[in-house]
Image 1 (cartoon, rainbow, N blue to C red):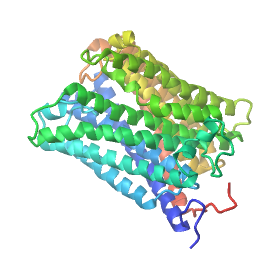
Image 2 (cartoon, one colour):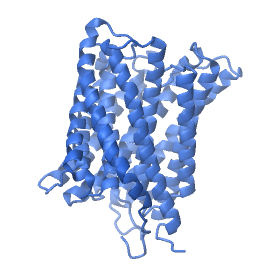
Image 3 (cartoon, rainbow, N blue to C red):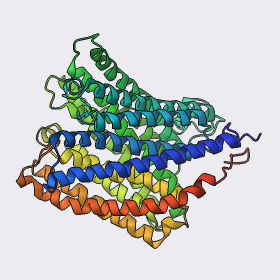
Image 4 (cartoon, rainbow, N blue to C red):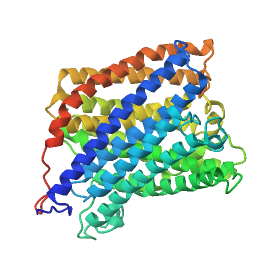
Length: 496
């Protein structure tokens, strides 16, 4: 049996490729379904439909958790596919993670739509144990979250084990020879940009999952009657260290997909340089700090942690901006770029990531946060860098995978649908921003008549967004069988 330089046989490598394709396809399907729930909520805020508030909060809970889970799943699949040729990922671990992920997501759906769990996708303590829904719904939702976290942990362990083997230890996997100017210090190969990003995400992913365990275990103990209650402020810190970090890590996964996609259309490639190595090594620490800005309103929180949150919120944007955004624009500048759906998605994503990042930095400023945090400004910045950035970069790579440079993604229809997506998403998030500037509160099931105008303006843009994605989904589904059957070439000794 032929074994490639990554340690996998041809059969194992093909299993890895198929697993990653399933990750991306299922994640995209979940994204589309959760988008329907988002449309229903915008229609509710526009005053054009009337949902029972309990159902609104069920949908809000499922929409938030489902969107994050779907996009994260797709990003995990995309990055695994990119790094698989050199990093020998375990197909068993990847498939096991998918099954666990699927079971966890199923529990979340049942807990919300059937059980009535409606504590919001963050499930901030003590809401999960104080709601008027059955305790079985709380168990189902939190166990679902636990299974999703376990699945993510399995992916992280698979990447860390593969990186360790491929690069001869964590130092090389983190590109320290480049960072500390020690060229020739190791006879092992150094990682590419996507491989470095995957290793960094896996490291912080383990920390985030451990924080999630620390949050969930006391709640399970309270549900079992072992403890009566526990400190809510400590619980909120652990919750946001888990959830906020997980969402931000998804962005860096998507950045790895930009590295893997854009060069194919510009004729240039991202190179592992000192700035790239420095940026991602800084991210290891910086991505853990900004969650504190979600606790500025918790006045019992020690003030040094508030200050750390402001510094972290400012600092985490620096490596992202100067390396990924400027680097991407540098690849595009002066190149004979081949316009296609992936390129348009990446350009729109860079715009959304920049706007959303600046808005997040503003919200991370204590004086502004005191006024803006509980308004629709927060969903505005989140949707900007998640819908445009994390999701947009991931779908760019998915379409590139299913099409190639010269396939359907470069056709006129795909390009038009991609521009339609950009216009729809832009109008949608701008309506959120203007609502935030008018101090329209977030997480309200029913909006006053004075708040409904911008929501009504947003609905047509959401429809445009939906039309674009449905059209692209039809094109992508047609290409799936060919991608599933495509044989995989295992890297051999002569390959770079």
